Every structure is written in structure tokens, then in C-alpha cells.
Amino acid sequence: MMLAYSAVSFPLSTWRSAVFLVAIIGFVLALKGLSSPRHARPGNLLGAAAALLAVGMTFSAGTVNHSARNLGLAFGAMALGTAVAVPAARLVKMTAMPQMVAIFNGVGGGAAALISVTELLHIHSTGVSPATYVVVEALLGVLIGCVSFAGSAISFAKLQELMATRPIVYPAQQPINALVGAGIVALFVTAVVTGSVDYAFGVLGLSLILGAVFTLPIGGADVPVLISLLNAFTGLAVAASGFTLGNPLLIVAGTLVGASGTLLTRLMSKAMGRSLPNILFSAFGAVVTATGTAEGLEGKSVKSSTPEDVGVLLAYARKVAIIPGYGLAVAQAQHVVKELADELASRGVDVFYAIHPVAGRMPGHMNVLLAEANVPYDELKEMDEANPEMPTTDVALVVGANDTVNPAAVDTPGSPIYGMPIIHADQAEHIVFLKRSMRPGFAGIDNALLFDDKTVMLFGDAKDTLQKLVAAVKAA
Image (cartoon, rainbow, N blue to C red; front, side, top):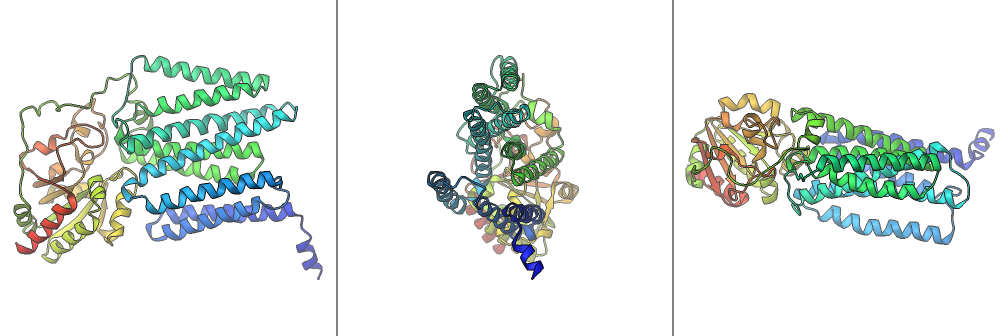
């Protein structure tokens, strides 16, 4: 009886802290689950359940001001968010998943910035001068959140090809960036010294500009790394708003997102063989041109083939490497490419998939796409594992990829993708490209491999072409 009485007599704040601790443990376990394809779905569901638990506890007595107006605004915002997010998540195509990640991440950063500004306004309305550390916390939330929001919006536009995907540079770019940075520092310091909320709006405006000018010079092939970094920024902004509100759950959740985003950014940079500063700042002060014909390719032409001829080549090969890219995702051809691989395997051909770290524009994007077609995980070879196989490969079948096999990344200093490790399709005995047209890849540059003597082209929709290849292999 005594134990039971003690249990129920705990104050609400104790129960709230206990529930928040359970939610935090759920977030940690969710991240652990997301590290493996086998446990990704349960991990995602666990993270959603933990978030739902945390949100429910937030509305417990004493946590929020339970006026009808506040509750109406809160539930109205939640309903609006649900009405937008659920259809967007269910209807989005797999090809558009990276830009969806970018825009949702940006919304999170923007929300964190607004929370920090709102809290500063609330403190100012009470007539109490906020402590210095409170102003610093809030301004950090504004700065980082706005950079994440604006940068994610530009990243979305590049991924959606609403604007040029190549690095965008302009005259006096470095002085302008320096001026924006100096302005933010000056307003930040002034706001901390004076405690005035007015300067926070100046920080907000300049931070939005900084996020845009920070993102514009980054080329399309490097945008996935940028998205990962901006995801870390959003986590830090959420953590800063957690300090401002005195909410330990936001602090821990934001720190988890910031830490995981930072680790992913480092792993991606390492996989691309470049330092993060090189990815972020290589275009600063450079004159980038990404149109026209690459040097040395003037007057050269490509060799076009037919599905029947390529089908015979594949059917009598010993080893075939399938190198998927964004074009495969656009054509929704993952099921047909598996059918082709199965048909070749039934004829005794050694088939494997060579997966570049950023194939499909985001880490794991291509793995998820092929998993939809039930491609066994052991047939998916990451770049470091696949490249040693390429010299003994008879046919490299490149399906909708371009930048990830472009030799310019190795032998053309000054190229937007120079320094990025690639799948060495050029080392295979024969190379077959499935492309809609001769349009450059996402980085906006020509691929000399298309003009190689051992390369043939199959033009057309990837799904339709692969279906013809399956029929040709069966008939061979």
C-alpha cells in the first residue's frame, strides 16, 4: 500500500520527465534501427511512436498554457501539418524523395528559428531584461535555423531542377558573403550587449541571405552532402530552441539529429574522396561553366546500338556489372532490371550491381529502390567493393547514371566533380549506356566515356529499353 501510494503521489513534473526519458530512449533506438536496412522500418515506427508520446506529454497539465486560444492554435497547426505531410509522404515518388527530405528538413530549421524569435518577444513583453545566455541561445537558434531553412529551399530547387544545378557564382561573391557574415556578427553582438529584440530580426534576415549565398555555389553532384550538413544544422537549431524553452527533450532530440547529420556528412565526404571544405567552397571565386562540349570531344560522335545486339552481348558474357543511376529511378525500372539480372544469372552469367554512394542523389536511395524489387543485398556491391571487379567485367551496363562514372572526376582538374570517386566503368571490356538523350548529368558536364571506342548507346526510356533487352537475352 505504501509503495502504491508513493508511486501515485509523484508530482506531474516527475512523470513528465520519466515519459520524456522514455521518448529519448526511443529516439536513440530508432537511430540504431535506421542504420540497417533490415531494421529500418521498425526503427522508423519506433521513432514515430516516441515522437507521438513526447507530443502527447507536452500537452499535459502545467506544460502549456491551456487557454482555449492557445490550444486551438496548437491543434490547428498540428492538423494543418498532418494534412500536408501525410499525403506528401504517401504520394511522393521515390525519385523525389531527396528533395522531400530537403524541404522537410528546411521546415524544421525554420520552425526552430521562429520558436527562438517568439520566445525573445515573449520575454521582452514581460518587461524583464533577458539574461545574456538566453539571448545567445535564442540568437543561435535564429541564425542556424534560418541558414538551414534558406539553404534547404535552394537545395530543393536544385534537386527539383527548378533552377540551374551547376555551381552558381557571380561577381564580387566573396566580398558580398564577407559583408553578410560581418553584418550578422555585428547584429548578434549588439543584440547580446543591448538585449534588444529588434536586432534579432536583423539577424534573421541576414541569416536567410547567408543560407542562400552559402548554397548557390555548390554543384548539383554535391547537393546530397549539403543536405546532410543542413540536417545537422536543423538539429543544432532545435537544440538551441530547447535551451531557450528549458525543454530537455528538444535539447536531446536536436543533439541526436545534429550528431547523426554531422557523422553522415563526414562519411559522405570520405566516400566522395573530398574534404568537406572542398565540397562547400570549391566554387567560391571560380568561374564555372557547365555548358557546351567538353574539351577534346568536338567533332566526336557516339556509337548507337540495338537491344538485340546488346542482348546477345549480355547473354554470352561471363560477368556483367549493372551500374544504376537516377535515370533508373525516374523510369521506375527497378523491377525490369532485376528481371534482366535474373535472366542472365539463369544462363550462368555472374551479375552484380555496382552502387555509388550518391547514386540516386542521396545515400541509400538506390539501395532502397532496388530493395523494392527484392534484389538480394549480397548482389549490391558498394563502390569500394565493385571497382576491383571492373577490370575483369565483360560488360558494364550503365542504366541512367552519368556523373558517377564520368572520368572527368579523375582526369579533369577544374571540373565540378573533380576529386569525386567514381565507378570505374571505363575499365570494363565493353560499356553500354542506357540514356534518354545526350543531355549531361546532374552536374551539368559532358561525359567523355560516352565517346569511348568501346562504348555503345541505347537511347530511350530505361524501362522500355530494359524490357527489350530481357526479350533479346531470352531469344539469344
